Image 1 (cartoon, helix red, strand yellow):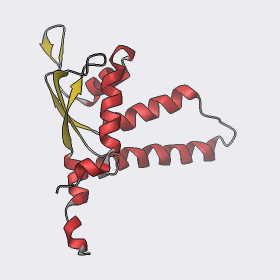
Image 2 (cartoon, rainbow, N blue to C red):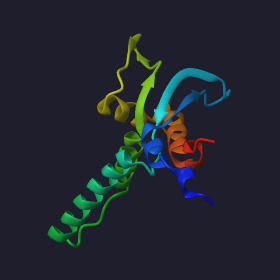
Image 3 (cartoon, one colour):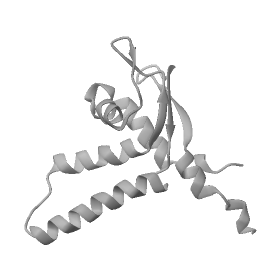
Length: 133
């Protein structure tokens, strides 16, 4: 097998793939498009490393500290948000919603919009979708 067939794969992890968010009940397209990077990509790994380094430093300062479920959920949300490269079609109260880190966290953290977070998470996990034929 010629390993050169995988040249550029790491780059494609960061460039991402575009998905259309589906309605949670009907499965119909919503018109919301999100470009999602792989969890294997450098943009996501940077966030994971930053969190891990902070945890190491905290454990040295306070070895008996135990993380809470809420802290774990918050970190998972930040990792999923790091996988969002861009989006289109998102509006809030009739106005376009820019794809900023703050807005991404707000949307993904909104319990009413759970299906958006779930679909982004699923796309970021699917490494095969980043491999071009």
